[in-house]
Image (tube, rainbow, N blue to C red; front, side, top):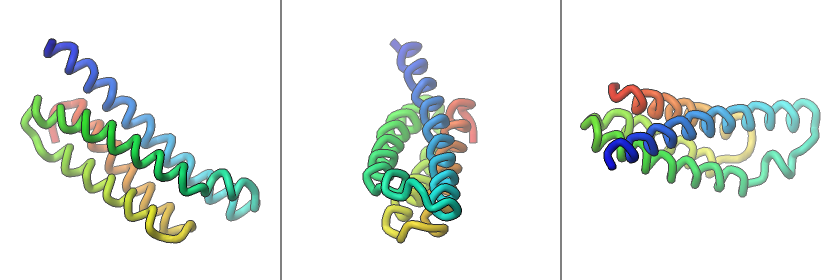
Length: 123
């Protein structure tokens, strides 16, 4: 049973890293396509995309980082992930643009780092 839980946590950490990368790509492409080329604004800047992304990040982060903390006894990956999720949440409260992009990319960077550290069991 313990091996199965560890495998699930590892998969969720990997999913968290992938989701973080996809979110960062979405942010950068959104700024470039909308700001520079003036296309795709309604689809790329839709608040629902950001709310769904944050909800996914919360679920994956709480489960995998929480289980990781229980397994290896280190709070740091969970704290780093929580900091990143907080930045992502704040990004939902600011206007679309560079502030939102910077907050989101900083947040997903911290979340990805937390998942990487969680996979290695140290921080």
